[in-house]
Length: 251
Image 1 (cartoon, helix red, strand yellow):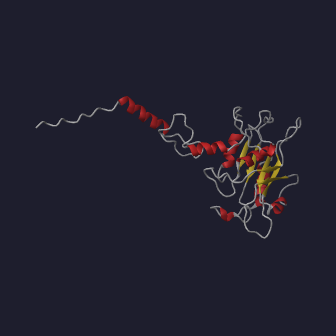
Image 2 (cartoon, rainbow, N blue to C red; image 1 turned 30 degrees about the vertical axis):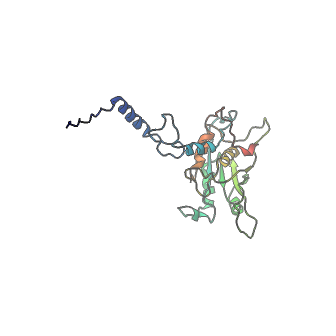
Image 3 (spheres, one colour; image 1 turned 135 degrees about the horizontal axis):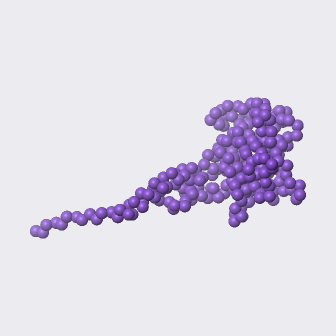
């Protein structure tokens, strides 16, 4: 009876093992540019997203950068945007705390003399306008209705109160309008929540303030963080190879 031969174990290639380990270490700290979750270690070295869904969602979050011919003035301007829980709607949010619009408007006037924008519900517009200084502008975002049973006409728009801002250029035909028609919540955003504003709204709001690269914007009620992402893209350098345009207000 022949004796069984002992199995032979070939040693792993130390070079390949080292390369794989180095690749895992190099990609361990990489985060998806959309959802901020770790990118799988086996992804390509130049991968920016953790999945196809995140890549597609980021592509659809369109914000056209500020025009090249709109440059900052002698100094950068410091703006603010406030999108607090609308009166009587605080229960939609974890804090469940009503906001004093009187104190909020005082803060905006005290700290942001360059200009600010304030979102409010159509039902609360009258009361909030009484708190605002003369010269504010009321812009309208037509977001479309949410069909349901009601004893009155359904609300399909939201006001945006704008104070000051950089004057727009007058040496050409103006395309920035005080009305925007755009759909509501961008549901593919990682932190999508009730009341969040879509990228088209953010770009439109920046244009109302005359904002451009070099300026600063404080989002006083960041919520989902979508406005902050939109501001980063708006103040970035324009990619001439990107033909997308979210500015429905300027067409």
